[in-house]
Image: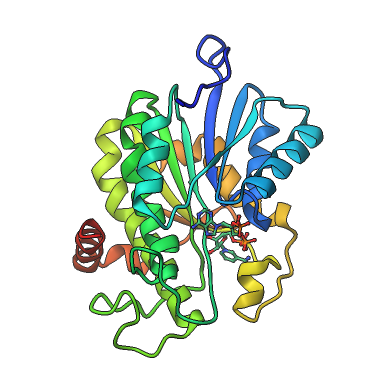
Length: 272
Ligand SMILES: NC(=O)c1ccc[n+]([C@@H]2O[C@H](COP(=O)([O-])OP(=O)(O)OC[C@H]3O[C@@H](n4cnc5c(N)ncnc54)[C@H](OP(=O)(O)O)[C@@H]3O)[C@@H](O)[C@H]2O)c1
């Protein structure tokens, strides 16, 4: 069944935001803070129906905004992402890529792709690709990629840890470097359509993801959500593109500046 936007979305000039991984610590706080903005509809893109329905109920109760709903998607599977985009009806002004995993043991998706690469990297890539036409139609529109300062050691020749021994921390750092590189790649490609693409570090928050890496977190989920939400709703997130931010400040990103590797990664992602 096509996804129907709330009946009044178009007429009332309501802005529509889609947040992946909105059942998690930071994703739910992002969705809730965006839902707290006036004239905004928020769609929670989640893989677990029960958790998603609960998050929708809690956000509606906390914000009083009834324009909050969920859609099921497994971002680690291209067919699932494409199916969501094909069913989508109505505008899309903001896409927040946030869903990520950090399994301690190497896992693969049913398609045989290492799961951190599939979720944290290809998930972002496929969501932007699949929703580009929707974002174009709603332009000016924007993409916010939730990345991390905890990033590095990307090996373009071993994106799925086939040659190296899998370590969830190394695979995670690689994936978050990739998110920052893909931000630069898509920003360049989408600029002429008035679609901005920016990346940020959210904050250090205790969550399933950070705990699996052996970390806690000294920020609350709301604090962690503040920079992604700032990019999603404030003019800076439209005016700037291809940038990386921490604590609402732009930080130079060496990964995005490595043009050859950025192109190499983009082309590698196209092959999946
Ligand atoms: N926590 C930190 O300190 C920290 C620091 C820097 C950056 N970040 C970034 O912040 C983002 C959110 O992290 P978090 O700490 O909030 O993690 P989290 O609480 O573990 O939440 C992760 C979310 O992603 C969802 N998800 C995982 N795989 C999915 C898939 N295949 N399809 C759809 N949804 C999927 C999870 O769904 P389920 O609920 O079904 O598992 C959950 O909603 C990540 O991009 C992470 O890299 C976090």
